[in-house]
Length: 291
Image 1 (tube, rainbow, N blue to C red):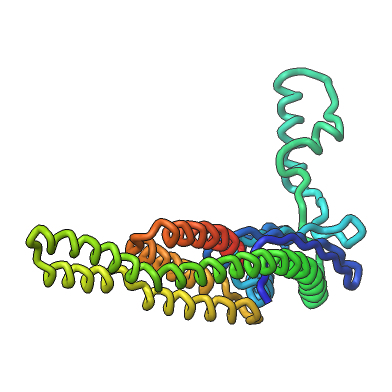
Image 2 (tube, one colour):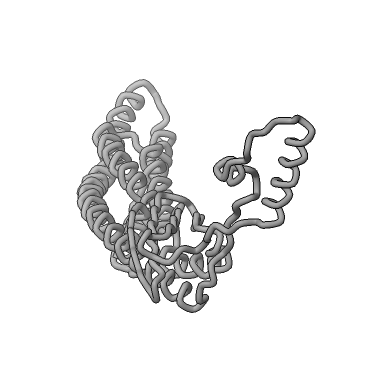
């Protein structure tokens, strides 16, 4: 099933007093690029999160945001740095003696000095932390996948509709291509008749007919185009990521369409090629968002 690369998912989990939320945002990207923003205590688990995410999301620019819920246990707690506080008090007493001032040192003033209060990591069970994190990430991934699948289904419907239009245009191109050599032969035959009246070389004109018939023959291009369409259609139902393969096939389809257009010497055939290429371009834009 075709999946979009764009999506958003949010998950939350609580284990043994720990509680935090995970948000995952994904947008188009040629490869899989995962970045994580999380509290410092989760740094040892970031590689595990990346593995968990990359195991589900193969392509896209993926941002993972992890935050602690207020209902959970605090990961860091403020503590007094007693030696720094004592040093400040001693320094302030010396300043008081030197200056002769009698002002007292307030608690607010002392607490506001640098490094008097610092944060200390709480003692948290690492297994419980990993378990909670894994569950929250899994929940966010499930939500994101649902969005990706829904968008992918809409994209697949649009592509299928355009593929049907392309098949119709290709059928018309095939009809035009089959009659072009005959029409050109009639024109050259008429010209030959005029040249014969003027002493022209009928053998030379016959050679021109053969050369033109070879140059305007697009049967091979049509055959390859049909083959690429069949491969593209087969990718639509594959469960694994197919965006890169689709992108390659669209390039090949465009290549064959360009060759058809360059060989065309018929206005109607050219018109059908232009319509076909227009639909291919719209499919190419859609493919850029497929995982």
